Length: 484
Ligand code: BG6
Image 1 (tube, helix red, strand yellow):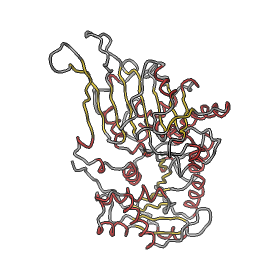
Image 2 (cartoon, helix red, strand yellow):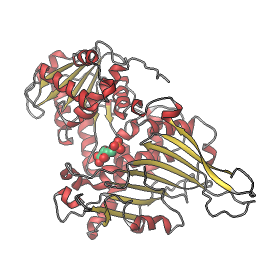
Image 3 (tube, rainbow, N blue to C red):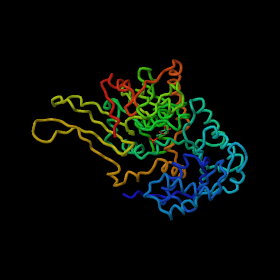
Image 4 (cartoon, protein in one colour):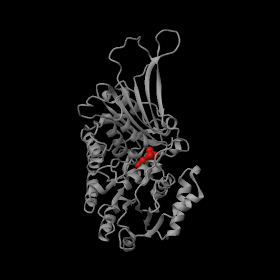
């Protein structure tokens, strides 16, 4: 099914950190895919700005390589790539000095959408914002885009919010959590709020528990320096898993507009209970055959940082009181698999013989790989032999349903960058949301640090530490398997 593409207004997109990893792996490839889809207007201009001594021709070359390296081969088209890279220019900029800013000011087009992507460390956000203001580069309607990590804790997040607020209104600030741009994550809202089917059951009366799993096979090698200061809590739970939890748990917003949606998400975060120590399992992968251990990857033999986290979380409000949310994420696990499972309760009374292998109804939302959903329902096993029951999935794999190749499902960044240009903040985090998430996370981390908590070791390629299984077993529940 061909997707409908609505071209965006002409824009100037300035990528600070334009020669960095994020630009190469995500931003430029996403723009190329949108270009191929016909969404970028001819007047669009993309300006790489960084410290490197590139000129525009060299930057266009960098852009072409980024496309060749990070866009699926079947989308490589020499003519299209040649035209695409013409949209790019390069300015050498000193983020903490004065070089390059006046030149940039001269070429900005005031009557166009202006977006400034801060693809740099958070330490530079304030410097960039200040200079955009000082050199009168950013117009009143300009947008700035910032990436996670948005702070290291509540204090630093507040400081970042404050520094940005000196120069930009909240309506101009786009804080990216790329999980919100994933196709299935948005579908979560469609499934909940565009159907009558699920919402009446979407509460503690009918939902036994919810599992959110983001499992990765990669380790932290190559980025150990950053990761070791973050751990799974700061790197994944405070943002990505928190956002998934919010979308699953929030009340229906009155409108599908940025503040209505974000108000409801904020209420969820504020209703989270503090988490008891017994409801958290931290893990760290150990060496396995040729594979390095976490401490080898992090280059600190004494590191106590967690590469795995499982926790039971409760939300204190009318809808969810009594329904636990189990969150689990980790590196170097058995498979790359992210999913949300809404596990419903058993019917109040069964008229059939008890069956050993019966499971409850489950709605499983697969985020990756193989984006889609399936709903597990119980039916009668076909054939004679009495009323034997079996579970079958009602499968809605997006690739099959939409007739799309899995590679054709847009990358999260494609949607998010286009939303910035369109001026739609619905899928971006608001400042108060980020702060509320840190307010909940900080005491948990402080407690670990206070008592010198040591994470449990787990084998690379496993499902995480045994204790994580126990977290569920204690309550007579079990995790869904982490498997391809
Ligand atoms: C990033 C984290 O935000 O998300 C990484 O910093 C993690 O540690 C990544 O690997 C996961 O993203 P995705 O889209 O591959 O699930």
